[in-house]
Amino acid sequence: MISTFAAIDTVLGLHYSNHTTHTTLDKLLESTTSLVKRKITVDDLEKILYIDMNAYEVFVSDTIDWNICIKFPVDEKLMSPTRKSEFINKLNKWIGNNPSQDQLGSIDISSIIKHQERCQPSSRPTSPNKIIKPNSRSNNSSPIKLKSSTRLLDDLKNDSGKFKFKAREEETEKQKNNGMSLLERIRLKEKMKREQEQDHVNSTEARYEKYLSQKVQMVYDVIYQLYNTHLESPAQSKSFSLTKLTQTIVDSSSYPLDPKEVKDVVNLIHKKLTDNSSESKISVIDSSGIQVVKVSNLNRTQDLKMLH
Image (cartoon, rainbow, N blue to C red; front, side):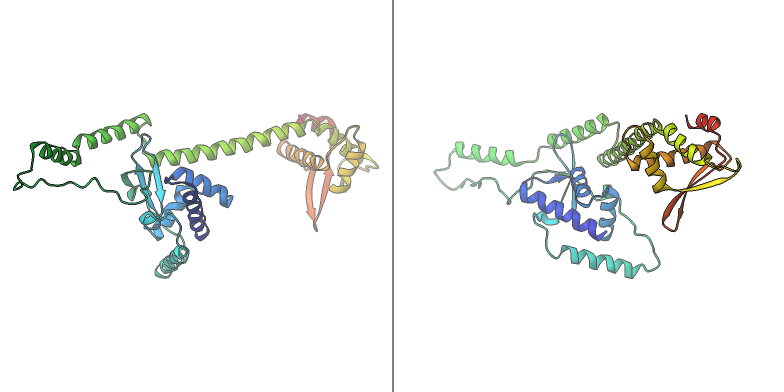
C-alpha cells in the first residue's frame, strides 16, 4: 500500500509539472499502473483513503462529460516531502489500534466525492471588479451610475436556473450511460479491460498450441522409435533426458526446429495423452533438477488418434 501511495503521488506530481489542469481518476489509475507494472484500481485508492481520508480530493468536474477528477488536498500542485512519512505514521497507528484485524478495510469512494468542481485549478483567487456604491448625498450622483451599479449587483447573483440546468445535464448524462454512476462506469471499464487482456492471453496461447500441434506427429514418431529400440515387452518403460531427447528430435528433423518449441511439443503430447487415456504413456518428471521423459505403453495407431 505504501508503494501504491508513493506511486500515485509521483504520477500526480509529474502531471502538475506539465499541466495546469487536474487529471481524471481513470487516467491517474492507468498512469500509476504503467509506473508500477501492476494493475492499480479504484479499490487500491479506497484502501488508501480508508487510512487517510484527506490524502486526496476526489471530485466531479462540471464539464460536459462530468468526469471524476483527483488532486492533492488544498490545491497542492507539488507533493509535500512529508506526505509519505505522514501516511506511514497513520498506517502504523491503524495497525496498532487494530492488532486483531489481518485485513485492511476500505472506504466507498463515492461517499467522499465532491460535486460540481472544475477540472481547471485556479492559480490564485480572483474577484469581480470593485463595485462603488453611489453616494446618495452627493449632488453628482446620476441615474446612469446607479443603474450601472445595480446591473453589476444583479450579475453577481446566483441564477437558480444555472443549477437546475446542471442538475438536468447530470441526469441526462446518467441516462445516456444506462443509469450508471461515474464510479460504476470506471469499475466497468476496468473489468472490461481485464477481460480483454485475458482474452488476448487466451487467444495467444490458443494460437501457439495450434502451431505446436502441427509438429506433434513428427515429435511423437521420434519418441516412438526410440522407445521401441531394444524393447523387451510392451509394458516396459523407458526414460530419456528431456535435453538429450530434444537434441535428438532437432537432429532428426528435415527442417530447423527451436529446442524450446520441441520441449513444448513434448509437454503438449504428455497433456493430450494424459487427458485422453487411463494409461501412463508419456510423462515429464523433474528428478534432482533434471527433467526426464518417462515413456511406456505406446500404441502408435491409438495414440495418434488421441493426439489429433
